[in-house]
Length: 329
Image (tube, rainbow, N blue to C red; front, side, top):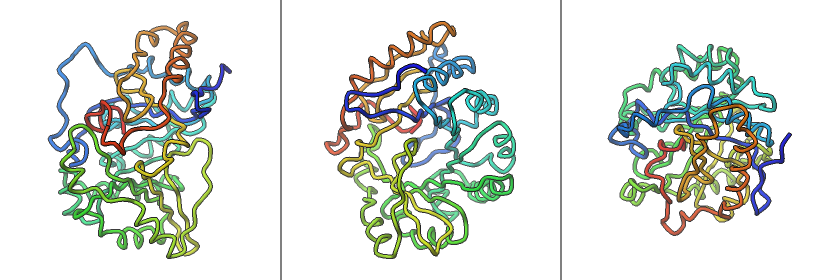
């Protein structure tokens, strides 16, 4: 194995978030409120399957054990199952996850499992079908819920459900969500609304801190779980009376970046050291041949030495990220 990916703050990177498409068929208010708009640059197509194999192998050879396939909506790729299979077949990769809006899950999740997908995150921002439609722009609540049920039927022991918390929209639904996971093995992940370049006004109107929810959980007997080395950034809480779990993702909290263990590669083949970084690093020229792996690893290692100790969201600086779909959230 090559040297473990590590930055100058001695953070090791076990987790790759790999975007395979910018395209999404939902119009979520906090991400793509006007829907997906192609860039018009036909020359810059999304990563091909051979390019994906090469980038994943390089990361695996440097200690990465978890890959999350993201988008946009990754399942819009016609070769999604082949992508999953190739990632799962890479030596050293133990977890293959995806984040999806879930609209195709009921029909396709059995195929995803057969291909080697080990973990699923589904975005469900409301348990009220009308609010779900208001937030996502799509009247697909029933299909998404059926997809979650189907995931359990085909053998997934746990499904993670992502909820972006928004004041005056869904922030009052905590009791309903808690009731929903009482007897279901769902890890409910409340994600603080994050400020991105195109969403300043929405952020000012709807941002709500996760700290109040954490205090409420602790007061009601929820206990913090210990993190594994390739876990994401959530603080996960468990309760003896609940089959489900709750994860809180609070990027505005002090020291959030101390446990950073993930890097991102965009659907166009750029390395992003931070979701809110200032620029992406071109990798695609080194993804054309197997023989380029050592040069690819060297470029990533060099760039890691420039990674900042923290993002600068507290200062209202979201870097170059126009919206979360652009580099896979």
